[in-house]
Length: 496
Ligand SMILES: *Cc1c(COP(=O)(O)O)cnc(C)c1O
Image (cartoon, rainbow, N blue to C red; front, side, top):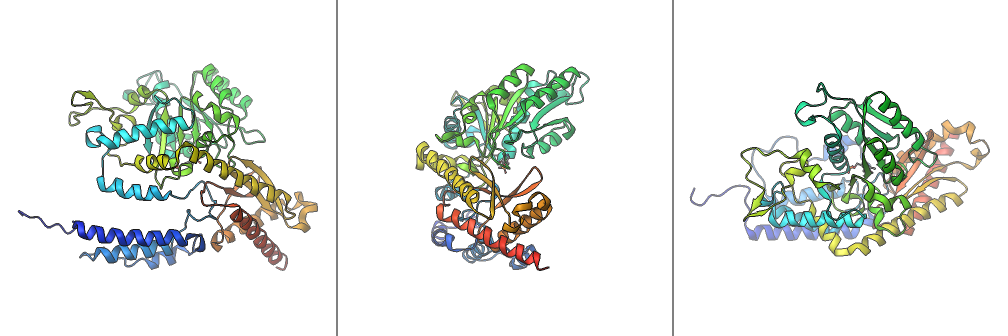
C-alpha cells in the first residue's frame, strides 16, 4: 500500500467541482426561499417513502449524484425555518456566513477538546465567548463553553451549581452520601422543561424541583419563591439553585434578576439564568430593564443558534467563576498530555463541559459577529421586537382577533369569531378547540408557521419572531392567513 487508494478520498479537483455545484444549488435555493411553502406538510409515511432505498448499500456510488439527490430531497421535503413567514417555537434561520463557516470548520476538523489539537480554533472559541459575554453585559473574564444548545448550556450551569453548593464530596460520594442533604432547586412554572431532564439525569429526581407560581405577567412570584425556600431550609434541606428566566419559552417573560440575586444570597443558593431565548436581547437598547442585570447571575445559558442566527447547533454556557467550572468537570487520566504547549499554559475545553471531543461550533458564531458587529445584532434584535409589537397591535385592533401577551419578540393571540364575542366565557372550550385546529391547518398549509401557548387554560397562537428575514408584509400576511382560516373553520363547525 505504498499509494493507498481509499474509497472515501476525493481529489482536490473533484472536491472543487462538487463543492462549486453544491454552492450553486444552495445559492439558488436561498434566492427562491420566500416563494416556497414554509413546509410541504407531508405526513411522515410519505416522507419516509421518498427515501431512495431501505437497504444499506453494499457498494458505493458516485458522490456528485449523491450530493445532488440529497439536495433535492432536503429542499423539497423540509420545513424551512429560514423562511420569512416562519415564526414557530424559538427556531431561527441560519446566517449564510454560518453555512459557509460550517464547511470551513468541518474541513479543518479541529478537535476542541484540547488546545494542542485545535490551536487557532480554541483561541477563536475563547474570543467568541468573551464577545458573547460582552454582548449581554457579563464580565469578559467569565468562564464559558459552547455546547449543542440551550438544554446543554442549562445543564452546565446546573452541574456547576450542584458541585459548588453541595457541602460534601459530591463527585466522589454522590447524592446518597451519608452526609448528603436533599438538594432542592427552585424555578417558576414557566421555566423550560430542560429542568425536568436535569433533575432527573443528574440524580436529584424531579420531585426535588420546587415549581413556584407566576404572577399575571408570567414572571416568578417572589413571595411564593421565598416561602418555598424558607420551608425547605427549616426542614434541613439544601436550597442549592434558583433558576430564573431571561425570556420564558411560552411568552418571553423576564424574571426580576436583581430580586432573585437577593434571595439567592439570603439562602446561599446559586443563581442560574436561562436566557436561551432572551438573554441576547440584552444587546438591544429596547431591552426590558431586568436584562440589564444579567451580570448578577452566577451562570447564564444562551443560544447562539437563536438570536445570533448560527446554524444549528450552538448553545453557550457562561459561568462567572471559571475555576468552578473546572472543578466540576476536570479529570486527568494518564493518557491525556495537556495543560501546556511550548511551556505556556493552555485552556483545554474538556475541563469545562461534559464533552470530550468537540467540534468547531465557534467559527460560525465568530464570523457572524464580525460580519455584522454588535450594532448589527442590536439592530436585528430590535427589529424583531418591533415586528412582534406590530403583530400584537394588529391583533388588538382586529375585530376577530384577541391579543394576549407581548414580551421581547413573542406575541400571543387567538381567533375569536364575531358572533361569539358577547359570550366568550361560555365558549372557552370551543375557542380552545377552534384555535388548536386553526394552528394545525395553518402549519400544514405551508403559508406561515406559528406555534402555541397555553395561558390560564386558554389555547393561544404564538408567534416568536427570531428571524432576520421577516418583514412587516410577512406580519400582515400572517394576520390575514389566520383570520381567513379562522372564519373557514368556524363556518364549517357551525354547519356540522
Ligand atoms: C430554546 C430554549 C431552551 C432549549 O434550548 P435548545 O437549544 O433547544 O436545547 C431552553 N430554554 C429556553 C427558554 C428556550 O427558549
